[in-house]
Image (cartoon, rainbow, N blue to C red; front, side):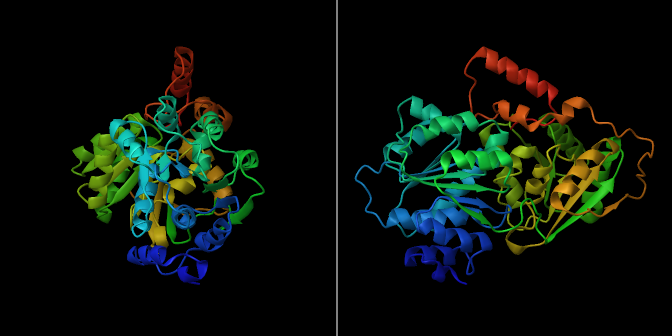
Length: 429
């Protein structure tokens, strides 16, 4: 099947061709015709399988078939959980609308709002936004959502994890009840299905791949190690393997900064990206990593979604996530668009429970080994400290901190979040 058979316009087909795509992915083949029929869609697909184009292309087709209104009110809204994902979606919308009379803009926190306000005043057909900045600008009466025809929730499960459910409900109330709703997610949890029941109207369920499966082309490897040996082991793997582009995940911001310093002291160029970094610093780090100016990007889970890095060869879990679904999103940064990739996890004794949870989720045992010269202590404690095993419900109850996407409503809420974040090993980014 080609893109031509999906009913897309010549202008869109030309834009798709320029981007180098000739055959639609499974999620695109299934979702695009349904969206063009104006159905509400609940779609799940692995990260890196083209789901952004799965909603962007039909959305552009629908909007372009109607004459643009004089003042160009926002007619389509795409909500994303992170700034990086918002920027990526915006880039895709611009690429695919190159030959259409469609204007788009992106808004997110952590940066000056004035350029974003200026773009809105010039008229926007498609708006890509994070929830916090969207509500902020709406409360300032700088944008209106009463003409929305299409709503897209991208990476909806991540939005729930980051505590955006209340903001999402506020945004729902600002839009016309009669609209097309599209919910795209890498996983289908019970919470996602509950959200879908609230906002979707007789949705069509689309699953391009089994829930929470990992990309087959990713070579997954586990090394059992002592926790204290992890920094030296990572340096050895990168140096001995001559790895030139490596995305490394830690669980905390402090851990990311500490590891970055260790790599730099070992003559390995590295930068960290996490929620305490300014947007300018995050953008700069990602840009230098993509260009190859630095070898290693050390990230917290804020980077697990929304980072489109073509042909990224190596992902390393310096620390396993304590939410098994996050493992799928992390390693999904490699093995994208049909390319192969390697995902390495350094697992200490206290992370073995996390590993079992991950293997249960993905339905397979990951090949494990030890590294010569770094034999793990067989008597090391496998006990996990209680704060590391916070329940998902607690995390959803916490608003994101340190990322500029949302603001606390009062000092009590802010103090509650501080107490939560000091007790939780998995930080909301």
